Image (cartoon, rainbow, N blue to C red; front, top):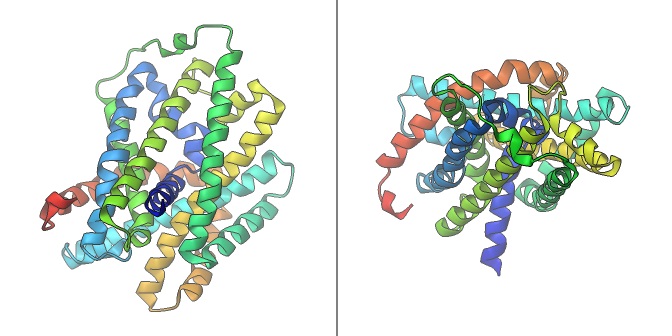
Length: 350
């Protein structure tokens, strides 16, 4: 029973590291997959290979090389200058992601609850800080509650939406003429970016876990992510024949079901952003504490001061500036991980 619990806890933290604002809002799934109509399934399949195939093995790889945080991947196996560049890029990934999630929390309070954006920031930052103050136990506890809730609400929203449709659901799957390899390229970028973020978060968390449990937890979490991608993809294709005008397409879909489902999805989206913000800030804090040789608590205080000015810039501005850049840079980091995977001794055990 204890082993099953460990697998589930690993899976939920992994999911929590990925299902942030872009994923749960439907924007990422549209831009990377659904915009290609039926051809987007190629990209989703490729992302599924990252989620369930590569990511769990990278988790175990970190344990095998004794990595306590993401910089240990770089400084132990790369020339110093390249290691520094990768370290800076990775840290920017995390700062950018946390800023986006906290800014998204402020936007939810402002646009959908009618409250102040800055009040939303304050509540979001406070929740993140209190959770992380409890260290890994706080992360495990929060994700064990939030991720099942998010998954259930997403499934209920989409299945209820399908039941309200008067036309054939599969009409939305009609193919469009596309340009070459773009669905595959988008799948690579999406899978690589989310792999980079998940590895950053999970490296320290799974360091003391059994290899087999890490693999099973990673596969379980990856399976949940792949399933959520598929059902979000199907819902978006059904709901939108052209590019969605809504900033958060899933709110449109939830609103078509009922007011109660709309409100439930607002709550689900908010906590999806917060869970990702918690996971990524934990990874960044481990880097700061290692770099400055300070305590976990002191590092947490410093990291929040680094994050807040970026969150002040607003959700939309951050997404537009940061995500495209990070997506392409992630491909280079993933290539490094794959090379390292084959260099590590006893690789057959992974």
